[in-house]
Image (cartoon, rainbow, N blue to C red; front, side):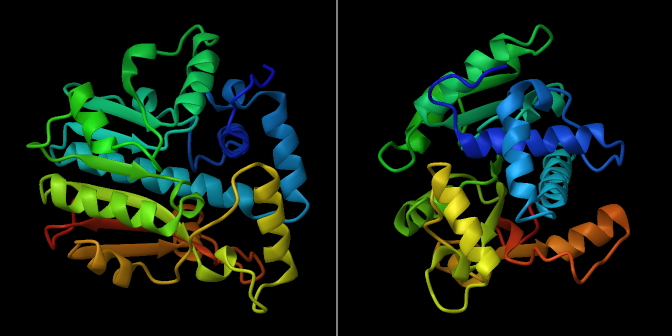
Length: 281
């Protein structure tokens, strides 16, 4: 499949890595639609990134699996609404579908149009699995957009914010966090990934590999804009009372039973948070 105009190249890259992980037989994650969604350019981007970041594929597989498990945990606990913020080429609405659970995919209009174009070419993809909600996070009110699409604010919701925070300006990211904490039930939960502060800076502490990553991401049209090393202060300031973080090494040990100091990928982590002070799931 060729890439239509408007495709998010970072979304294509991630879908390419998910396809590889699915086809590897290692069982970390499973996305049967990833290969078709990524197209030829998805694999080409993966090859390009492999030269600089050979651990990127494993990180994407681990991140996908951990967030999948978080969503499954939320559903098992009784959550019946799942919101994917900045959905890209995410297929969780189809992969993790459950009776009585409604998925909402929120994304920029051009990215969402591109995704729907790709999905329409897949004969077995359930197009009704998700409610599509168009939104530009920098200028639009995503809470209002979700309400108009039928989200019930009175019910606990699982929010997924994968591969998005570091591409936003700091205030846009903080505003989104504050609104999730304050305008939805405290029993709702959020899972998201973030980058370390150095990756969003041009400081002297950057390794050559880090500078290369900055340049490659910028070349894809989505430069890194916001990073932090510890999620706790940010979550406290935006209204959360519970936060748990996991890093690359912890996830590799959990899902592959391996640890390798040379497998450098320690600038990215995942956080699970809630405003209630208790684990959301």
